[in-house]
Amino acid sequence: MRTLVWFRGNDLRLRDQVPLHTATHQGEVVLVYVLEPGQWSPVAAGGAPHRRRYLHQIVESLQRDIEERGSRLLLVAGRPLDVLPWLAAGCEVDEVVAQRQTDPEARQTASRLEAMLSVPLRLLDGETLVAPGSMRTTTGGPYSVFTAFAKASSRHLDVKRPIPAPARLPPLPVGVAKWVATATQQTKENARLLDRLPELDQEASDIHGAALHGGEREALKRLKHFVAEKAQNYVDARERLDLDGTSRLSADLRFGSVSPRQIWTAATKAIASDAARGRFLTQLLWREFAYTTLWDRPELLKQPFQARFARFPWRRDERAYAAWVEGRTGYPVVDAAARQLVSEGYVHNRARMIAASFLAKHLLVDFRQGESHYLNWLIDGDIAQNDLGWQWSSGSGCDAQPYFRIFNPVTQGQRFDPEGHYVRRYVPELSRVPTRYIHAPWLAPSLVMTGAGLQLDRDYPAPIVEHAGARHRFLAIAAEHFGKGQPG
Ligand SMILES: Cc1cc2nc3c(=O)[nH]c(=O)nc-3n(C[C@H](O)[C@H](O)[C@H](O)COP(=O)(O)OP(=O)(O)OC[C@H]3O[C@@H](n4cnc5c(N)ncnc54)[C@H](O)[C@@H]3O)c2cc1C
Figure 1 (cartoon, rainbow, N blue to C red):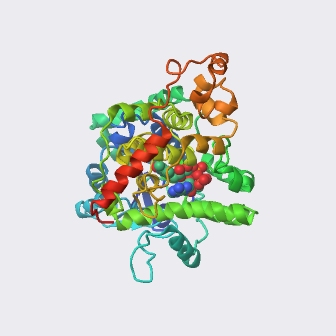
Figure 2 (figure 1 turned 120 degrees about the vertical axis):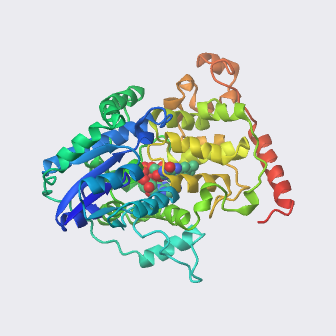
Figure 3 (figure 1 turned 180 degrees about the horizontal axis):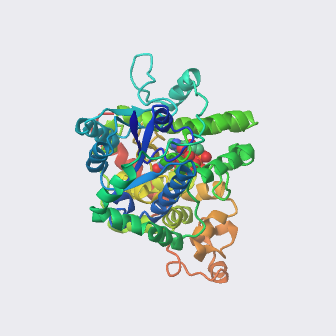
């Protein structure tokens, strides 16, 4: 039997790779990764150089690991729907296997592909610990409350031991490599994209050299280091913007260079502190909750979970939105988050919450604008988790932060970045502002500002909205809107 293993992009690893494991036990394998132009080409990928760099590193490491084991990863450019039926027929495979990908677009792609292939398409679970949609409340519906979901998960979760990487892989079947090489030479785009890969990597690295390195080995190193050392302080350190207190595994999960099962198992085994282990596993359950929520409610990508937010009077304010995107709101912690996003493709979770809340509540800009900006720039940009995060922060989502709870960006900064290190790292023009004023530079006496070499509104903006006034405005507009008999 000959099987085509389609690496979809959420499964770029050899360990705990269920489709690969299944295929190698069936006989010959053809390993394929489809380079979708949208992921690689600078125009289509917009401002996502970090993600392209990361993905390139992962694909390169996967290629190397596969070659070391005796096979080859075929990189083919195009859209999976165009390329896979052609490849499956040309390579004369009996079956196509892949990891199930559960976001609405991927589901649609899979069902269209199934109809186009002349051989069966088998999708295997592995994106999450539990298949989305499989856990149900006592009334048979999907969960809407995280704590109930987490409680049920801890009763039902049965995480099997991860599958080791294959020691050897069967060589590419005779004739297949040659057929692919000849056939793909005809597609100019293929050659162009493949040639551009190292260049793209360079482009992104130039923007920020200190970013994380992608790849399965790097992901495993991160996991090992986290469970052995960093995790011990997770409970206290995870909320601190100025500390490197979290696992930094989100991008690895996004591309599947490590599986959720590997992380869960390693954390369960190796994190000694009950509190730290519990807290970390809860975060992994938030990921599960995001996936299962989107599985049951794909419409959430277009509309808020809470119907009363459906026609919310968001403001179209391009100036305010641009200030938020560019890190020029005058609120240091909000601006640091904006600049961390663009310079690194990552933002600390607490900073994501503060920045998202600020956009929706202080500026009254539709959270979906921020959601797509984040999805474009985050290396870990994940449709389900990003949507949950934005709907949570704006108060409109499933088990969201109540709409009337509005983060104060000054006190949030003082609490989670007490010395101002986070702000100084990403907003260097404030680097000499004394800690006392670092989260509210407009309160500093002019002598202090002069000493810090700073003039407000010249070197750094004054706040674009005043916190108390913005808070009042949001609450008043929400009260009026909800009071108009909006369903709620
Ligand atoms: C507005 C907003 C947007 C977000 N967008 C994304 C996104 O696109 N992709 C993404 O992976 N996460 C997103 N998150 C969740 C969270 O911010 C990141 O998962 C986390 O910051 C990643 O860092 P880490 O791996 O070091 O986290 P850790 O604290 O080490 O957590 C471990 C893992 O648990 C999961 N996790 C942690 N917190 C959450 C959470 N609140 N919701 C869902 N899963 C969680 C992640 O997979 C994470 O990698 C978003 C949160 C908000 C508020």
